[in-house]
Image (cartoon, rainbow, N blue to C red):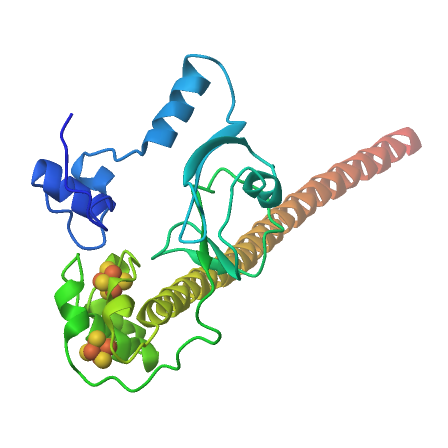
Length: 282
Ligand code: SF4
Ligand code: SF4
């Protein structure tokens, strides 16, 4: 067992592999591409339950924490249980709350608690809703703060400009796909630009472009195959017609020869009949 500092983003796959094994995962690759399997504790427990205990995944550990929670706790919860039911086991501070799932930095803020626990629900954060309206994003002042905090050494400022301009090719050049969406850049940005949202949008756009390209490639392949098939059918039909024509010609030639033989035989028979008549007359 090796301990690592409890510091945000140290649990991210690429960073974990680098800090524990000193292996740098190349851009666009995963831990498995460098021969490392990176599994969290919940997954390992689920594998043990399934393989050794023959028990399917029916529950998971969920953390309930946040500034509005009096005593943060971990619960083992059945999948499908409602958030309301789970949160009924927790004491909250008085006031207006906001709820988010999947972490304070990378999580998604929810409109309410009318949701169910799924196999991906790792934590529910309930915080005090102090801000009435989210701060309005201002222009980038090119302070470079975002660049200094990126744990995977990207250039968030550049990624922001290219994402904003929907220049996905350029964003990819700046390793957009290596962004782990940790939210550190958004957090420190003095202009309060929701940088991660821009990267998520660019990634979604990129995935859409890839899908469209795949669909277009498939459609083109289908069209080319159809053209080839039609061409082949045409050629085979022409060859078949040619063969039939040849066979017909041969048959006609053979019929003619047969007819000649029959006519010759009939000729011979009628001439021998007239010979016999002549002999009888004599
Ligand atoms: S931290 Fe915000 S304002 Fe500063 S360079 Fe990055 S995006 Fe621009
Ligand atoms: S969210 Fe920002 S800080 Fe985090 S990896 Fe992406 S670019 Fe870097």
